[in-house]
Amino acid sequence: MMKRLLQNRTVKFKIMVYNICIICVIGIIFSVTSYVTANKKAVQLAQNSVEYHVESISRYYQEVYEQMVNLVLNCAEREMFDLSSLGQLKTVEEKRKGLDYAKLAANFCAVTGYGDYITRLSIFDDSDVHISAGTALSSVDDGRRIRNAPWFDRELKKDMYDYRLDLVNSPFYKEVGMTIPIICKNSGYKDSDCSALFLSPRLYLDRLKEDDNGNTMLVTTYRGERIATLRESENQKEESDRLIDSILRREEERGTWQYQINGEPHLVSYNKESQSGALVIEIMDMANLKNDRLMLMQTVGLIFISCVLLGISMSFLFTNAVRKPIDRLVNHVDRIAKGDFSQEESLESQDEIGLIGKAVNTMSSQIEQLMDKRLEDEKEKSSLEIRMLQAQINPHFLYNTLDSIKWIAVIQKNSGIVKAVTALSKLLKNMAKGVDQRVTLREELDFVRDYVTIEKLKYVEMFDLEVDIGEEILYEARIVKLTLQPLVENAIFSGIEPGGKNGTIRIHAYEKDKCLCIDVRDDGIGIPEEKIPELLNHSEKLKGDQMSSIGMPNVDRRLKLIYGEEYGLSVESRVGEYTQITVRIPLEY
Image 1 (cartoon, one colour):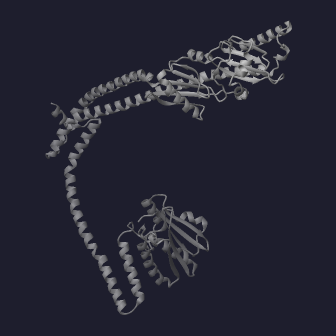
Image 2: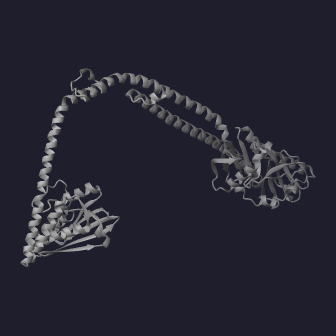
Image 3: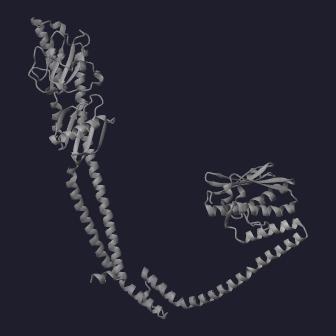
């Protein structure tokens, strides 16, 4: 059954197969395109999401950073804390002033809106006098603890307007853990006065938890020290360290790309703050998109199956509508093949198959006429071949006659007749071969020299021909036959002869931009500038009195038809001085 089905050659079967194949191909193309497009959009959407998320968190951290730096600058530069006026806090006035300073520092912390994350705001000098506020327990030696910390001098030297954050061990009493310091010298009082703010990393972690979207989040300093992490597993830390190191070496402040972590594809997005140096990284496991891809594949598969079923149904309906008139048409053609040329009116209708039936009826009525005409054509063809064979005798007879005249002139030692007859014989032989044949430049120049030989007899050495070939290899370049002779003829009749004095025609061939260029230049009367555009007018009629019957416009048009519109002739002239026609064609060997 399957074998008979595969061997079925009917139009109905072919139309069904073609329709089903086309529908399947369209369904596959549409399904694959839809899947690829939707998958790209899903990845792009995920990329945009993580980029926006990282940028949002980075913007929040930048705002916190700016407020913390401004808070330290307010304490250091506005001369609101005169530690020298506190003495040793022994008198009531000194204690009251110390309490006022502490309240002012606490208000500064509260105004920022991040007071719960300020571990300590301290204003201190080198005599252990200090004012402080914040969440950490206060100690009488807080100032000394800060000054003696190994990182104190490093932090003090930082530029407050480009303060890069570091993560250090907390210097405060019974305060275990890490903190982020911002330290600045005070102005207006003693040189030893300093203001220091210590920010808790909890602020960074709480922000990550608040905006948790299920992905791994990392926040580090510009040195790569982790300030806060979210969902970073232990087996991922080594890969994360390499990722952080590679990002820190990048010059771009932000970026997103796919990255392999433990052999699995992940989407990584980061943002580096240029001032604080804080680095925010979000790592999204691409496996999170698998559910979306599975649902997308199911949808695409359903669309494909629907397309195939629709194609099969439409194929059955279409083939049944087409089959009957095609069967009638096939039967009628079989009768014509057997010699029955009668017409069948039932084949003709207004649809495409009816038009074919009408054409078949017309064809059947004309077959006998066509057969008779073919017999007549065969007879005419045979007659034409006989006449062509007879016509070949005439050129050979002419060449033999010219050869006999040449030998008579040789015997009589008349060199002029010998030259003229020899040149004329070569010209006739070359012209008999057609004008669109490609020959070498050497052969074309020989043809021009034969023509010049005959013309010199007429004009009694009134002009000379000079040939300059740039490179010897150019002699073998291919050129369309009878390209140069009309140009030389034009130089004689239109350039030198009207001037009434001897002249020179120069032919210069050279290679330029992989093209063969040939200049034909005469020192005749020249051409007025306004008439130059008319010279190559392709509507110009052929001049019957010229030997080649191929004028300049026709040479130009012939070259353009053969090589393309960018090739052909160009004319340059100056009245009373010269005329130069340049042939430009592709360089071929």
